[in-house]
Image (cartoon, rainbow, N blue to C red; front, side):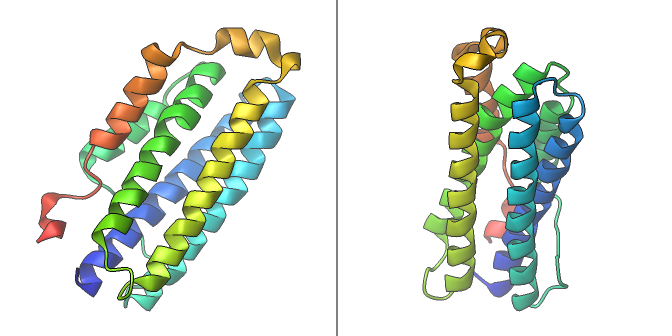
Length: 182
């Protein structure tokens, strides 16, 4: 994989992390549960850290500092669909059970595709981002399982209705066009 292609992927991952950060930041005010607001606030920070590390890596790959590349229109449409969900329980469930696990799969695909020796700094950053995302999902699961949040738990959509659909959409959508693979 050339430096240019690696930079395109890193820039695309950065764009996604920034978009996710802005999305969950926008949900804080309209999320009724205080505990959820706290969790979302921490996750805004985590996504910002992920995006910052990717932006610095882009500079090392001969692109401008904090270089961002929008993902494919298909992936953008998927992200817009998530952002537009009105009900707090639906959007949180879709985000933590679909979007983030789907992004984990995209990061893992990149790690499988890149040369870990030639692209070691990117590999380290992505592994750190994966650890942060896994922590975010774990924190959400702990929050959602809290016995104090019975009404929130009852409003979560069923796994088969929402989670799997979001995960499938996140996994199937191409990150960037096929031309990047050449």
